Image (cartoon, rainbow, N blue to C red; front, side):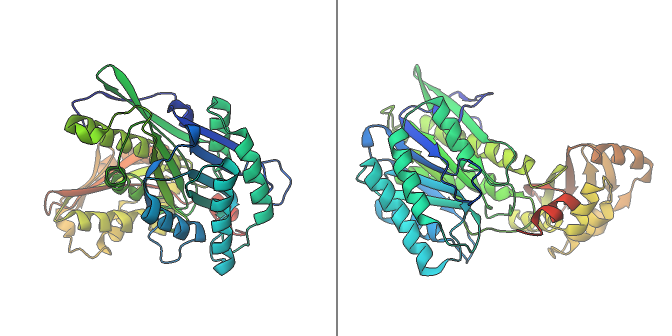
Length: 412
């Protein structure tokens, strides 16, 4: 994307703090029941108890957590009158039956009452599946958070920490839009390290803007951005129950991008840039990964077929194991592409490791083997596979599969 209006991604994002007109807070509620003092509960609201407008995208898993079900209802009934977001880590409130639904509702109501904001709250949870929420601790935590709300960088950083589970670092991104002498902002934070497979993953992402944007515009822009970013990453091929990406608008700038096609284009570019940055950071922080590999599938008869090939390769355990072993085993890549069953012809395949050709028209260039090896020993590289069937393409960012991943998750 290259809009007519300048859109700039900040090198050093301070997270939600970068965007004016929002308050935040976080606290340690001991949701994990380990008395670690880890931040695990947070609130995000607008200034002066104002109503916020929202767009949101959720997991496509048939098994959805109670907070996701609640959020869908809130979005349907109150998309332009949102109180804010209450989020916890350490417990997913998934597969918890009617009790889970009751707990999610209580979290939303408690946030509304404690903050004295007369609009419903989104509820997001992440952590262990199948365990009852320690709802009394959470209600106490919400009350504590409501008293600490402010727009400080310290509180913004605390929120970024409170949403983490197995992540090793906080993830944030900010983009500025320069428009007629005014700087407009879109900022976001995210978490996600395991169960990362679209559509979306065990991930949460919260974006905020100071533009005045309708629900319809927010929803359309966010959906388009997610399709090209969060839905184009895969760490382990597992789709989670709690995936949520929420975009809030507070109207602080008093500018509506829907009134200017150029500004609308710049706004959608900003959403994409923030989502893309966060998605890449999520992949780079995959549970116990050692490599990030971009699969660039080209020359397909349709985008759908290109995506099928990319996911077949990116989720193959054999391929992932080869990534981990720094093995330029193009045979595994081609085999996985074949079982996507889109009618490819091996005699037409071209495959490159970065810029180094491995196959041309299905023939291996063995003389380049040492160069292939040099590429796949890197932490980050690209495999380009051209099927030479058409003009469609799809790009998937994936990872290797390590022994440490298995050990880390065997008790989860």
